[in-house]
Amino acid sequence: MYAAALGWQKQIRYLLERIHCVGAPQGSIQPKLANLYDRKDLREIDRFEFIPVPVKLERVNDSIFTDVLRPGRVQDLVSFFLSEIIRREVTFKTCRCCGRYFPSYVHGNAEYCERVFQDGKTCKEIGAVSVFRARLEEYPAMQLYQRAYKTRFARIKAKRMTKEAFVVWGEEARAYRDKVMAGEMALEEFEKWIGEN
Image: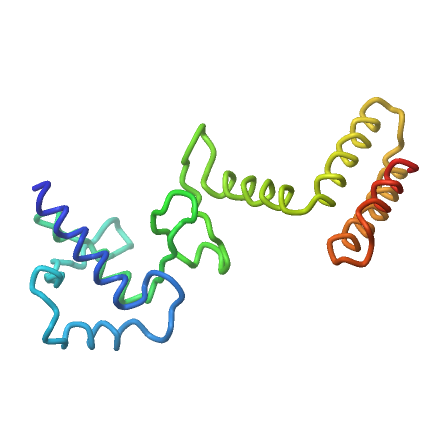
């Protein structure tokens, strides 16, 4: 059973990667699937065998009938879900944090999935923090702004600065920070302004 599951996993990965379900979708999945299965060089070991899965219309209560899936084995479920993915043209992305697939309809430009990855935090949370830290390391103006922001925010909590004054300072500081990052102002000038304000 375990060996069969590994075989299915390899076949499914091969299939999804070849018909561009993983990554940026470029056109409809259906013609790509047909072209893939028409290829003479596709090895039998790489070909996922879709099997008909028994679905029966059944009554679930006095007023509702619905399709009920009747799988006889695990491969029936795998085949059914893979068929649905292809039928609905669901595309996937690879999470930049854990490397696993996630549906791209979660958010159009999402780069991280929402699985719990480490210390109870999701890949999305960990990814956002790592991107923020990378930006801080890359731009000294961001580091300077962040330190000054935290200092002023602490002053609000200590009642040594009003929220209104903090908002005004924040708008001005962001404008200066952006000028430094765009190369329109020297970092030293920004540092001097922060020291004076």
